[in-house]
Amino acid sequence: MSNPYRILIVGPSWVGDMVMAQSLFIALKEQYQHCSIDVLAPQWSLALMERMPEVRKAIVMPLGHGQFNFKGRKNLGVSLRDENYDEAIVLPNSWKSALVPYFARIPKRTGYLGEMRWGLLNNARKLNKDFLTKTVQRFVALATEPCAILPVIPQPRLLVDPASVAKTTETFLLPTKAGKILGLCPGAEYGPAKRWPETHYTEVAKKAIENGWQVYLFGSAKDKAVAATINELSGGACSDFAGKTS
Image (cartoon, rainbow, N blue to C red; front, top):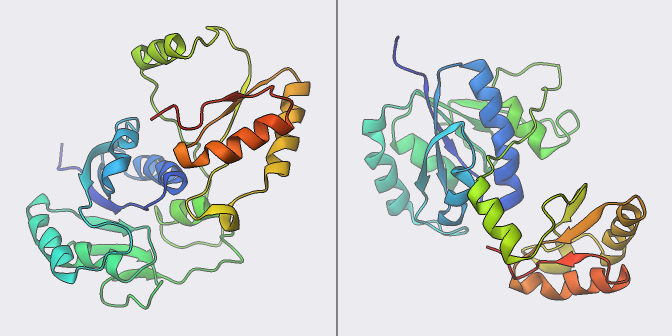
């Protein structure tokens, strides 16, 4: 068998976007059956990458969100030259995010034009936001050449570790046969300005509970207040795990 088509994905910086990126990974596997996919991603996302069978390996992006560090990005790109990638797909729209594939000398560098990235990207696409209205559509569209048909969106499917499930079930005294469960993640990195109102989450939670579902609230420690409010407005009928899980 000939060498697989080797792809480097420059991944996003946010949890939700990284989960949506799996739809792109699946689409690439459908397009190039034996392709090899590596993802340049923040340290926090490595555990998430481990649950995506399409990803061969995750490469830690040592620079934090918002850090420019031209020299650091150049050195990282140079260090990846021996990987001999055939294509890079850059998901963030920033100019700096396209530097690593450029310095890695990856022959095909795909992404949206973003911050005027001609040269850094040689397969740059102009994004039509009226056509590709959703972030996940924009990601998946990069798996193929531009066309006038909306892309089919493969559903993300993270691998589940049975041992981890059993441990979590035991730790939180969860029922082994819980029926239908709705998970709500009401937090946002930049606070209320980027967050759906608590009352909206409450209405969704109440509707699910009325239909016999259980509602689980998830988030980090800083999301405990908003999760507690939703639970209170829902009559305490939710299971609140905010700040309790990794």
